[in-house]
Length: 254
Length: 202
Image (cartoon, rainbow over all chains, first blue to last red; front, side):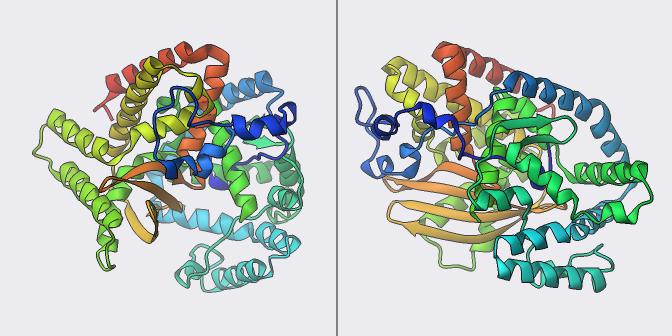
């Protein structure tokens, strides 16, 4: 349950097909229906009123809830304690720099996917960010590009697929990696080929170690997001499923 | 998933202010500033007793959020099917729940900086864009406001592209579908009890 970059999902494939489109148009929400309190007219015209509740296609919900439970235990009994210990010994500026370093290293994913989506300006921006941060920014430990107003924009293969009209497929909670869906999961596999880390470490064990460190570092900078969700939401599984989906939809739009 | 930022809401509302002072303030901005100033001042008043502080914060929140409009939007299709009793019960529970959530969050407030990114006013709607600057990332938070009489009230908060109203709308309708209105009410009551029981322990 974590960094922005890992979240995901979408509306496109939703099980709307079961509904009659014609009926849906008026059925969505009828503020003038019997008993509805009088909302000001301007609000009734709002897009929110017109909208179906976001439905996520989740045919394997029992499996997903099992994985959700597994990840929950993993988080509370392993990841979080490790991150807490790490936070205690590594000062925040160090952890921020480590985060910058990994982010800079992931440049190829953002660059290639910007290019694949023909976002030439974004691709150019990523390139200049990478060049500046890798040099002036000491191998990516610092982010001088941001001070120039060159902001990072998340792009990945799942977004590229979405951009070209590929639906999300079913919602999927993966062990360890968390929420995704068919489209974004496949995208993540593809993005793996753009990850330079495998070329920089000698073997699989080291690779896993580096990835785990990246994860723990990111977690050490997080302010108990997941704990908040667990404590406050009626059904954290549904909350995260919807949040992932909304966020991925928004990222694809951008 | 940075919903913790959810918490940040009031904070944000608050911190937005200093950055906005340089701009020609609109009525929407002005009123948000007042609320924010009040929240910040209350949080910083270490001399205040915790119960008094909570009441003060509650008053400020209730005055700035349009819980009734939020309730209608959250229930969406289910609102139409609900009877009057259910509607008012939902509004009451939803207000309590959001309030308990915010109070818990706000008390975890740790001086994060907020930058003010812009505002839009169109007729009776306004939108205020902010960023909360944390060590890990800059988190975009947008407030949506509607004009009620002469008051601008918050009806949605969008954190990292995730609309809270849309999220609640989806999850609550799912719960209603599976467990009915009464199941939803039971869950909400339990959650409010839980949140209140742990209040002040953070």
